[in-house]
Amino acid sequence: MNLNRGLKIYLVLLISTVYLVSFSQMGVKAYDAFLTKGTFEPGTLIGSVNIENMTKEQAINELEQQVTAWFQGEYLQLSINEEITVIGQDFFNFDFPATVDSITSETSNELIVSVNQTVYEEQLKTFLNKRYETIDHEQLQAVMVDAVKKMATENQFFSIGAYVKSDLNTVAAENFVSSSFDQAMVQKVVDSIGTIIIPAQSQVSFLEVIKDSENLPQDGLNVVASALYKTFLSTNFVIVERHTGIQLPETIELGYEANIIKDKSDLKWYNPNSTEYTISLELTNAGLFARVNGAPFLNSYKVNLVEKTSYPPKSIIRYTSFLEEGQEKVVQKGKDGLSVKITREVFDLEGVFIKSEEIAEDFYPPTHKIIETGLINRLLNNESSNEVFTEEKESTEQETTENDNSENKESVKEDSNTTDNEEKSNSEGIWETPAKNAIEK
Image (cartoon, rainbow, N blue to C red):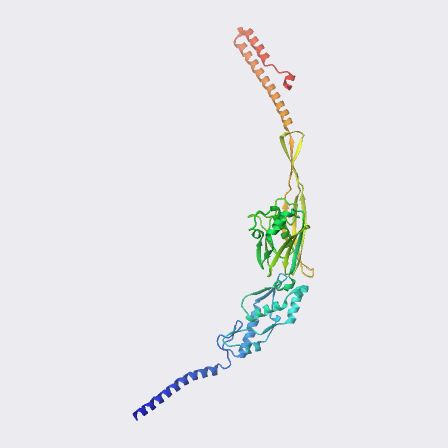
């Protein structure tokens, strides 16, 4: 009896405890659910916009404001014809209600956005003109939409040149150098180089390209480097380093020399484009072809050589005893000095002039003509005349001195006149002036 009573009391207490605990827990959850009805859980994002604890209406308003503010930050930029274009909000169509309806709570979600084709085509056709058809617009639009969906608060920079259709990657620039050079030397350099790869937005060094090759002929290196330099002038590549020699080689055209000296003179260039290019060299009987292969450039380039000036050499006379008088010998032939300015004009695809820029100014000093001429006979004649003049002067001085001495002796010793006269006579006989024919001898 007592056992049954105790069991009943225990069950009553257990049920009461479970009820009280459950009610408190469920009450709190019910209270939270009632107050936060229709809001999003913490950690819910749309792009970079935090919408936790917001209703749908609040989330839509917040999303509209944040998207507008993001585009005002000019985070989305497109490089067209070497100019930066800011992509605005009007390039896209947004569906904010559909975005909010498709949200998964406690995760990061993407905007539902698409490209406004009308604005896109109108703007890009204005910038690109005929080159519009060469662009892979599906790929370009995809990366732009992806950037908008994430709304990252950092600059999103895209170069239009990176989205040229792959099937249009052909010869972007080409140059030809006629075969006025030693083909064997040039062929050795061409075989050593092979194909040069120019990565996007990277710098390339000619000496680095040939660093693993040994005993390459100097003239061959200069011809190949000069051909590359001339080719690069027809692109938007930036010439970082380039040198010229003291004299212009006969095998290289004025204005296009690129002198290469190991560990001293290099040719360096920079590819500012977002696409990779390759360089191929082909040597034929007619000459050397240098080609830049890759996406076509958005502008065309024209190289001009202006203010060509020549400087005549001077003649330098050297006197030598190894040649007869009046005889001449040309030791070094003279050569005109040269100078020229290299400029480049930039045009768009419609042929409209954009700008002109000065690339370099080359100067080669004149080589003076050196002539050796004989002067030995004339010098000997002058020396002989000087000797005769000296002898005459010395004899006159000595004769005068002797006469003075004789007169002194007469004044001191009057009784020795005879002896003094004899000495004077002897002195005059010894120091007499030489005959004219003796002087000539």
